[in-house]
Length: 418
Ligand code: GAL
Image (cartoon, rainbow, N blue to C red; front, side, top):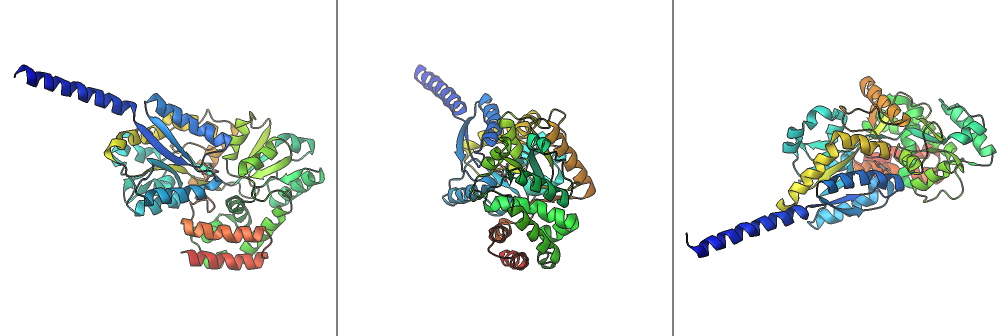
């Protein structure tokens, strides 16, 4: 080899080395999500920091709006433009809908290497996988049938944790009579639907919840039990303050945190707000199942769907998926978020009292067959049906129709959306 060739070769090698160093330094993921409240952002930070330790830069794409409806609109725009983010926070049937479009990545090699099949429960795999392929990494399990109460308010008024509908109403009456807002509520359709999950379960029990929300049985949707569930929603409406309309859920949590309100009916992401405000379960606030739903769990699981991206972005995408599934991360993240780990093989003994109860309830409900997907959070029926229920629940909550009409409209709306 002559000198010229040798020099050219070594320049090429040096060039390649420089190129790959730059590629490593520039590895980045763009993540679309709706975790913009204080508690949510704190939890997401755990993931950002873990990835940054691995040399992966985090490009944040937050789309505010609890429950993720606005975020889903943003995803549609990006995918339609042929420029999907690396990963998107998503719920249940939305994942399946995108997988059907053929635009999501195939994570099977990574899943096999890391043994995801053995550690993720079937109820979550039903959404993480499509057509035998892993397309999403589940980060948690939340549930919607919780009550978050200010402990001092309960103690001062001598209120014991209610376990039945009648006890709940008696407790709310006491709080209202004391001049406080009994129910801290944010008047947004998804928040009303979140309460409805619990009210339907409490009113009709697990078989009814399944018939109405999972099987979408018209006879259950338009039934005397459903009318009663709507009546109960109207009753709860009488305990909210005058300014509830449009309020974000985390501001409703703040009313309970500050002792201005007694309770909030919300999924366990609310706990993230209490913790972020420095509050301690059992000491400053109470968590208990919505009265009448003990022994049942209406769940939702946040998953990060990986979209098909160019080869230059695949390595960082796999690092993200792997970081989400890491056992230590699942515990660290869920401690902050209020949810429980998506993996069944991690040690949850480190979680606080509400987290421990969440894990125990989940395991028991799964065992007993009383674990069901949340309608409000996309795990009972496809998005079109979910949104159709939102419209009826909210119209009724705002007094636009009586309970009997609401049950009729619910059955019609669900049928039309399928
Ligand atoms: C849920 C989501 C939670 C929480 C909540 C409010 O749909 O699963 O993680 O963030 O919305 O934004």
